Amino acid sequence: MAGHGGFGRIASARTKLFVSYVAVGALALGAGCSAPPGADPSQPAGGATRAADPATSPASTENPAADRTPTATPRGGTPAPRVTPPAPEPITLAFAGDIHFQNQLRSRLADPGTALAPLRPELSAADLTVANLETAVTTRGAPEDKRYRFRAPPSAFDAVAAAGIDVVTMANNHAVDYGPVGLRDTLAAAAHAPVAVVGIGADAAQAFAPHVARIRGTTVAVIGADAVPDPTTRHFAAGEDTAGIAVAVRPARLLAAVRAARRTADIVVVYLHWGQERVGCPTSGQRDLARMLAGAGADVVVGSHAHVQLGAGTLDDTFVAYGLGNFVWYSRNSRRESTTGVLTLTMTGRSVREARWTPGRVGADGLPRFTSGDQAERLRRDFADLTACTGLGRIGTPPV
Image 1 (cartoon, rainbow, N blue to C red):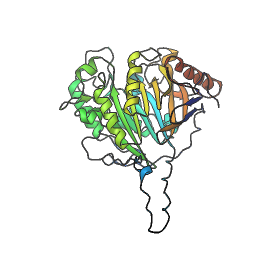
Image 2: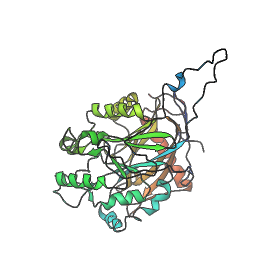
Image 3: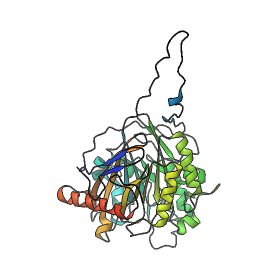
Image 4: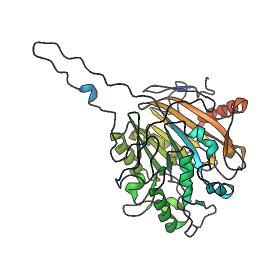
């Protein structure tokens, strides 16, 4: 189905991006294999995902020397035929916005295996699914001096894993809502979680380390970071020998992490906490950081924090989704804040071939309900129209 408002067919220097709005359930690509996390302390804590090989030995399928392999010439004969490596198989990456288990959502953790069961068909359909877990994972600690404070028991990790999420970023402004004690508990729980955790760690090396998954021969690195200047990034930034979250208010360390991942991974994904709350257009800071990440080698940049959706499109060869909004959330303060969805990208190598937005609405119980029919079409058009103020490219036009 053709896109609306220009979010239908997007050209980039590497390939053409075809964005189709397909109803929920249309995706039918198979999932890859999973493996437990490696023992390398530089890797983020977290459990196995359905697509991940051990992160300690990522093997890139991108070999710059492959096209320059010398051709042997037998004596007195003709050159041997050049062997062309097979093209990578398409894979799917899915992204959802902010998740917590506050208020009416807390009781769902009594049975974490079914806590988010209605979401599993959509979230588990992709080869790798990433979301933002916006809560401290602890039952202890002193609350920070702030208006909103979120926490959940370690079963929160089990709940998101059972829902089909493979990777969560915890680089956000609620991961350390219960101080140093809560931070220690969060890291301890993450070390044994059945889902990979990025964006937080015992030190900066761990907080900025990517989760690396190998999916049918394609290596995907996922990095999480927080670029919002607030008390959490000021007081709980991971340091050389201090625990905390991956802070990218000054982006040098994040850019270095992206460049390092670029050397070994086929696809580099950055999930950011950024932007201004309840503002539906990216700030100049977001646009600047997106361009810096694209220049460093990021293939996909997605984000959350604003509680509303922001637009998506191409920035040269990089796909950027500035804001995915709330996803599993306790409040519905407005129609905009209750509008949600899942973004699924089909990729071949580093090229995004298709983007699918599956829209929904957060219900009174805090869970999103995916829509269909006329309502889904309207919400897809609304999402497409958000690209207008992003400066991102669409329908063959370059970014501005």
